[in-house]
Image (cartoon, rainbow, N blue to C red; front, side, top):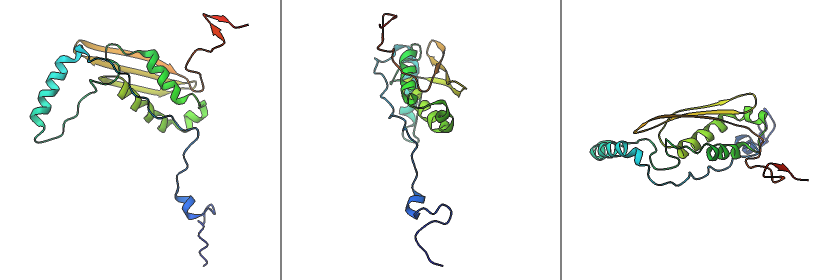
Length: 169
C-alpha cells in the first residue's frame, strides 16, 4: 500500500486533518472588568477570608470569592454587563449561537465571574430568540437577584440615526 501522506476518510493531508479549525467569527477577548473602589459591604467576609488564608497557607492553597474586581454584589450595573455580553455575540446569529453554545456559555460565564463580585448563582440559558441571564449575589448585608436578556446580532448602542428619541429625517 502506497502512503501518499493523505488521510483515508476525507483525503486531506495528515497535517491538515490534525489541525483544529476555529469557528468564524471568533468571540472577542474578554474585556477587563470595571475598576471600582473596595466594597465596604464586604468587610466582614474579607476579614474572615484573610484570617483563614493566613492560617492555612502553610498547609494548603486557599481560594475565595471575587471581592475586588468588577461590580459590587449589591450594585451590579446591568446595562454595562448586558452590553459587554452582547458585544461578544453581536456578530453571531441565532443558528451560530446554537451551534457554538458550549463556547459561548463558557465565554459568558467567565466574563460574569470576573465582572460580578460574590456571584452565588448564575444561570445562562439559551432561548429561541436570545440568552437569558439570571444572577444571585451576596454581600455582608444580604442577597440580590438580577436578570436580563442578551440577543445575538444586535447593536449594543443606540442607533446614530436617532437623537433624543426622534427619527432622523
